[in-house]
Amino acid sequence: MIARAFVRFCFCAIVSVGVSVGIPGGLCAQNAVPAIKLQAARIVVAGANAPANERDHVARKWVRGLIQQELNAIQNVCKLNEKQAKELVDLIETEWRTKFASVFRSYSEANQRGGVDFEFRVESAVKTWLREVESINEEQRSAWNYELDSRNELRRRIVIGKMVSDAERKFGLSSKQMKEVEALLHERWKEAWWIMYRNGTTPETKFAWISTALSEAQRTAGADTSGIRQEYYTSGGSIDLPSRPLADRFTVAGVTSDESIPLQPPPAADAPGQRDR
Image (tube, rainbow, N blue to C red; front, side, top):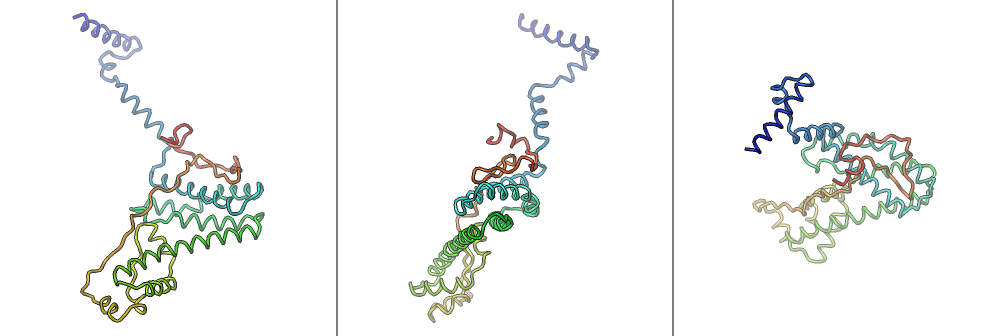
C-alpha cells in the first residue's frame, strides 16, 4: 500500500510540474518519452555526419590504408629526406579524393568487392605521384621501379605456379613438361591474372595454350569435350585490407601532410576517441 501511494504521489508531482509550466497534465503524461528513446534520438543526431553510403565510407578508409602502406614501403626503399617527404604527402593529400572518385563510386555501386581492385589502383596512383615530385631524384625513382618490377615478377611466379600445378593435376605432367608449360604461360602473362587471383579465382589454364608441351595421349585426353570442365579456386578474395581513419593524415619519414590541406569531414565513427569502436 505504501509503495503504491508513493508511486501515485510521484506521478501527481510530475503532472503538477507539467501544469505549472503551462502543459496540460494529460498531455504531459501522454508525451512522456522513455529514457531509452531519448538515448536513441541522441544517437541519430550524433550520426548525422555519417556517409549516406557505408560502402563508399569503407572504400575510402581502405584506399587511405593502402596509400599509407605504400608510403611506408617507399620510405624503406627510397629513403626520402624531409623536403621530398613533405612534397609527396602534400601532393597525395591534395589529390587522393579526386584521383579515386571513380573507384569509390564503382565500389559503392558494385554488388561485391571483386568489381574493384583497390591494390592495383593505389599502386598505379602512387607511382604517378612519385614521378610528379621533382625533388625525388632519378636514383630513387629507379629504386622504386625496381621494387615494382620485383613485385610483379613474384606475382607472376605465384599465379603461374598455381596454374602449372592445376595443369599437372589435370594432365599428369612430367617435371620437364611443367617447365615447358611454365614458359608458355609466362609468354601469355596478363596483369588481369594477378587481379583475378587476388580476388579469389585462379585463372583457367586453357588446353590450347599448353598443348604443344603435351604428349599425344595427353592432347587426346585434353581435347575430349565430353569431360567435365573444372574450375579451380583459391581460398577467396581478401577482405582484410589495411584501413586508415579518414581523420588521420598521410605521413612518411616522420613528416605529415600540411594542416592547411582540408580533409574530408570525418563521420562520427572516425571522431577522436571513437576510431577503434
